[in-house]
Length: 110
Length: 110
DNA sequence: ACAATAAATAAATGATTGCTTATATGTATA
DNA sequence: TATACATATAAGCAATCATTTATTTATTGT
Image (cartoon, rainbow over all chains, first blue to last red; front, top):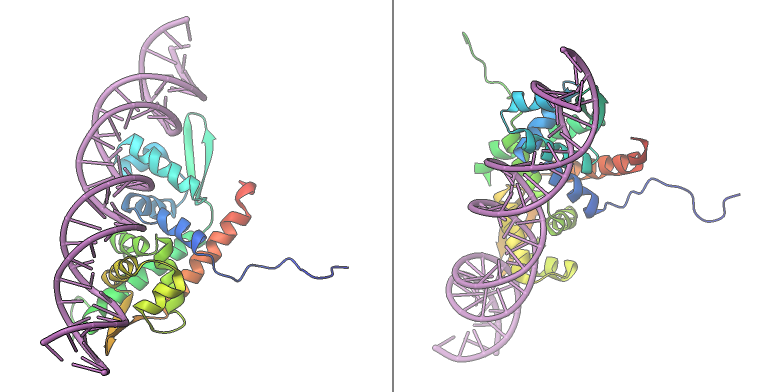
């Protein structure tokens, strides 16, 4: 049997991983891409058209989002479909938006 | 009676405010400060000691957190006490940590 | 094999940002 | 008012990052 340790979910909060994620959300184009991908997987060119940014810039930000483990890629013919890894990403984004709205609404109070 | 508009919570998500908050969370020292302030209000010097950073650096990050509306200041004698504006900040930080843990745990799957 | 389209990569640049060192401001106390 | 302590501010520097332009790689259809 297991003597000392058991595999446990780490409940010690690590600044590192939080920063890792926050950095990925700390750019307007990336947030817009995430919000767009919340509707479903899309190609690079679709995102380029939708967001009005250059193709290399879109590729760059998608690469960042992939580095941050937020999206996955899937090829279909000549197209690459990018997709959010998990729906919780959208949830967090909404939560951040809610909190921001709250903070701004109450900013004069303090 | 009210004819057309009613005061409503904006449910349109704004990238700007999300980025605004995410940027504040995109630095390790700031996240550590937030986590420390989750335990209650603290002075600058207390934070400096606790985190092992220089006093000007602590001041600088506290200023950023204030800009991001995440903390408030209160003077007591020569001391300035910094405090988290709202407990939801801690919640968001926990949520980010959870999501990061999940993403890392499943990173090989994709 | 060639042309056309989709997307990634590379290099260069400017802006932002974190950090250090040095200095100034504010507050209390002798 | 002089000294000590708490904190903020300023200036300078190096590193990171977002963006652009140019080029390359990959895929499909002719």
